Length: 80
Image (tube, rainbow, N blue to C red):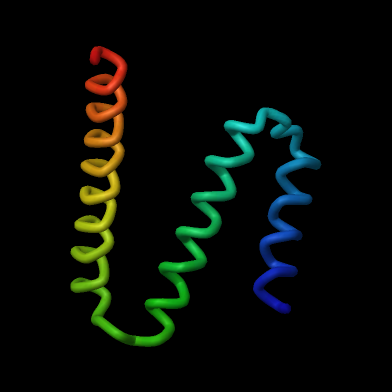
């Protein structure tokens, strides 16, 4: 319940600040959730801070590669 209230408060604050574009809102929501995920993993002390930073960077790179491959797949399908 506490975590859902945190997200709802963040969304309300964004709306108050005037972020009305759905793209802005979705990107801000994703960044909030990523930071919350990182905070939870760090609190669980699964890894050290240095290792956590390296793993976070690897995950970001993998997410970028997935997006790139999805775009490549979509363009390839449209050409057919």
